[in-house]
Image: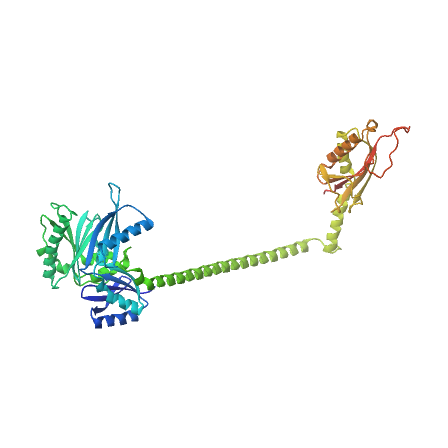
Length: 516
């Protein structure tokens, strides 16, 4: 991560601080003259890789409150730009802070408009930024950082007095939101002078806030003074409660400890604490125009690309580690499988040794067993097949049987390609080959003599019979010779011929797979 540095700018000088891990170290101070600007440019060049935040604590500030219609997006931005141009014409260093929506009427949005009204005070320092190409993250006002010093449950309206190198700052908060702030330069750094200024400026602020109707005139205003314990006696002498003000002292070292600052503060000037608060929780709004933050945008893009590269690299490494662990697990499983296979092989060999010796090799014995299984299948004979044919004949009692020729086959016997075939109770195509031994029966059957003249009935009865017979799983029925010849090449005989009628005859083949 890059180092962060805060440039504390007041009306007389610019002080540079390095903020890192809760410590604030003063590195240099630069006067607002030609020599000081040259030294500042060299300082920026030396620390070009750092991120700089400019914290302004000057008297040239302005605060205005405006209510605008509640809008969003580009419309809101256009209204805010117009309001800033109306109030702060001539300075680009202006921002708007949202104070929430009003609870009555149209529920407009209340804005606090802030500006640094003397841009010529900032321009020489920003020119050095542009010349050295240093990274400026933003310009902030000191009043934006002091809100972090308020107690966890502050009064509804409170005036906070803080001391810095620039002087005494008075910041007014209403329901936790900053509404107004002003800086009073101090001629002397003596504790008594600062305590006297705190008392007198608090009275002036009370009068101003009452005139602006930000507070009630007859209501005492809680005034918090951030002070070092060594300055508390002097402050108590000058800052005494009255009908308008109630003074409370915030212990500076305790506030610094609560904020996470590890640098010891020797006096009530809390410049280091303000720098720490700025880095710890940067305000959402800042004063620098977009062109002054060009190098910061480039840094953000570069940082994002580097972060994405690191994440991709980390993801690739995690994936590689995961794959490596999977490979190790697979290798372990493979080794376990090989070990188990060796145990099973040894157990099998031991079992073979325990068996009585026979005068035949294992391969010949296996072949012999296979042949025995084949013979056992063939030993079933035609019984199951004839029983199946008999069950179908019970259903179709009109069909008679003249002769049955059976055999066990390994291959599909030759059959005319156009012969009707049935399997599973429906018409199928005659298969080209068989797998395994099958029992086969060629059946010579006849139809009733009464169906001699009913050719359509003959074909229908034979088809129904063959469908019923083939319904048994593993059964194929093929019609070898139909009860009548339907081919167009046969000679038609005259119906006048006299002779004894004969029962229609047909031949079908039943093939059934032998089951163990």
